[in-house]
Structure formats: structure tokens, C-alpha cells
Amino acid sequence: MNNMHSVWAKRFTHYIGEVMKYMRFIFTGHIAIVLVFIVGAGGYQYSEWLKVVELDFPAEWLIAIIVGIVVAFSRPVTLLREPDQVYLLPLESQMMGYFKKAMNWTFWSQVLVPVVLIIVAIPLLKAVTDLSAFSIWVTVLFVAILKWLNVQAEFYYRFANRGHAVLFDRLVRAIISILAIQMSLASGFMGAGFLVILAFYIFTLVKKVANNPVPYEHFIKLEQNRMMGFYRFANYFTDVPHLKGSVKRRAWLDAVYKSIAFKKGNTQSYLVYRTFIRTDDHFYLWVRLTAIAAVIAAFINIPFVTWIVVAAMAFATTLQLKYTLMHAGDFRMDMLYPVPRDTRKQAVAKLLRQLSVVQAVIVMLCALMQPQFYLIPVVMIVVSEITLRMSK
Image 1 (tube, rainbow, N blue to C red):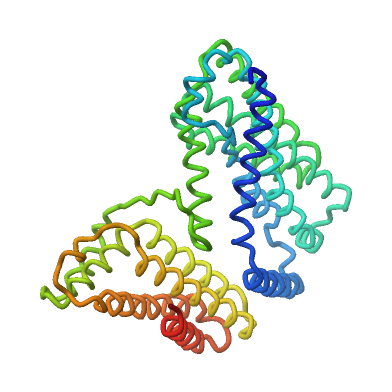
Image 2 (cartoon, rainbow, N blue to C red):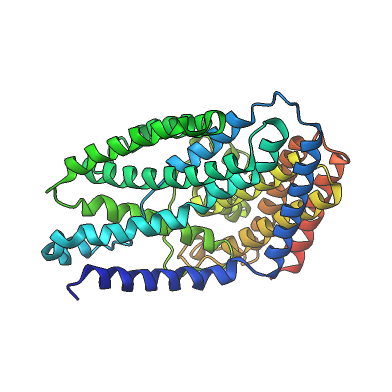
């Protein structure tokens, strides 16, 4: 297998199969229903806001900033694996053909997000600007070209610098992209000058990487981190056998442990609280679902829709945390300690009840400006308690 095109084809086929294997667990029926409610409620809120939006609203700058940041984040998808830094060395002269395939896939897999953002913003642009439909659709094409240039720029920058100071590179490209989109919306083809700047930047990077060895270590680590992020997300919906969790001490939460009295009966409570706080998968799962519920509650003023969404978030939080905390397969010291078997179940239930209260309070505070916000914590706590009692 000395043809890099066939190497990419086999890697890509395996990658798509791996993604689809877990995506069928993520987008299940109940998730689809929640998404329909969210999209419908969001669309209704958006249309109602457009009726009262001020004519001097800075729509062009707002769209340029959001889309520009999204466009600048163009992490390459290379599908490289750890053995490649040894077994692909004899084929290093052909690697640019492989990387061109990788950049093509990176572009097509990422361009949809900024293009959709621009399309969603079309009603706002028509409401507060005098842009023609032709000018707006030209901007959509402009954003796609801008994304392609950013994909090329980030790849060659990483190739040339082994990923060092990539955040500075993204910041510079984000500023250029924001100005390019704003100029495109405000002055038509004036934004094309920024495309020339990016093209010249890419040209200098290409010359810099000429005849340089491929930074396999950097691209492999980048690919491993990208796939691990996908596996962690998929693990919220189904079990991912080869997922490696990470642990981090959060010193600012040490006070939580002090609230647990030092006695034999609290052995499991201390262990469960410590596991939740220090395990990234558990902690960030709660943070993400709480943040989603809070954002939706803050911006959607249709009580029925808000109740459905926050109830779904409370259900998902309780169910997934209960499963992960109760069914951990690793050896624990409490297995050798003479404490009753049901104390872990009691400790997990105590933690989940406290987390549901904290989650409900945070979401309620974010929804203070919405009608009947006081019912949100009731819905979340009740759903969490029912889930806790009825789930195995």
C-alpha cells in the first residue's frame, strides 16, 4: 500500500464508519424531539424579535464577529495514527498528496457551520440593512472562500511551527476574517483585499514548509485529541469501551469535602463526591447540560417549551451521572473497606439530589426575565427525582 491516495481512502472509510457507529446512539428519537422543540422555539423567538429590532442594530458587525471566529477555528483533520511516524517515513515525499485530501475533507466538514450562520442571518440583514439578495448570497460564497483559506493557513502554520503559538495565529486570522466579512457586507467587493492578505500569508507558509520533515508528533496528537473529544461526547449517550478519562484536581472545590463529616458511615460519600469533582467526564457532563439548559431558559420565553427542554436536561444529567457513578468498573479501595454495600447507592443519590438543586437554581437565575420562571426549578427537581427513583 504505497499509494497515499489509497491510504487516505481506507482511513477515511474507517473514520466514517466509526463516526456513524456512535452517531446512531446520539441522534435517537427523544433527542430528535428535543431538537425539534429547540429549533422551533428558537425560530419563533427569532422571528418575533425581528419585528421589533432597531434599524440601527449593528447586524453587520455582530454577524462578522460570530462568523469570523467560527471561520478562523479550522483545526485540520488528518486521520493520522501513532504508527505513522515510523511506517510512513519511506513515503514522506508523497505526504503532501495525503494532506491535500485531508484539507479537502477539513473544509467540507467545517464549512457548513459558517454558511448556515450567514443564511440564518439573512432575515436580520434584510430587516436592518438595504442589502440586496444578490449581495447577501455573494457574501455566503465569500465566507466559503474565506473558510477554505483559513483551513489552508492553519494547516501550513501548524506544519511550519509544530503547533507552537497557534492561538496567536488564530487570533490574527480571526481579526482578518471579521474585517473581511464586515467589509463584504458593508462595501461589497472591498472585502476581497483581505482574501489577498490571507493568500499571501499562506504563500509564505508554503515556502517555509518546503522540504521540511512532516511534524508527525504534532498532527498525531492533534488527531488523538480530536477523536477523544468525539468519544467523550458519544460517551454521554452510549458506552465507549476504549475511552480514556482524565482526572484533574479542582482545588477551588476542596471546601465541598469539608462538608462531609469524618466518620465511617461517610466513606462512600467522600469517595463519590471526590470522583465526581475530579473526573473530567463526570464534572464537565454536568457543566455542559446545565449550561445548555441555562442558555435555553434565558432566551426562550415560551414556558411550555422551556419546561420540556429543562426537563430533558435534568433527566439526562441524573440518568447519565447515576449510571457512571454506580457502574464504574475500576477497582476502588472501598471494596476492601467494611462498609455496607448499599451505602454507595445512598451516597450517589445524595450527590445527585444536591446537584439537581444547584442545577435548578442556576437555570432559574438565568430565566428571571422569562414568564413563570419560578416553575423551572420545580420541573427540574421533580424530573430528576423521578429519574433517580425509577432508573436502575
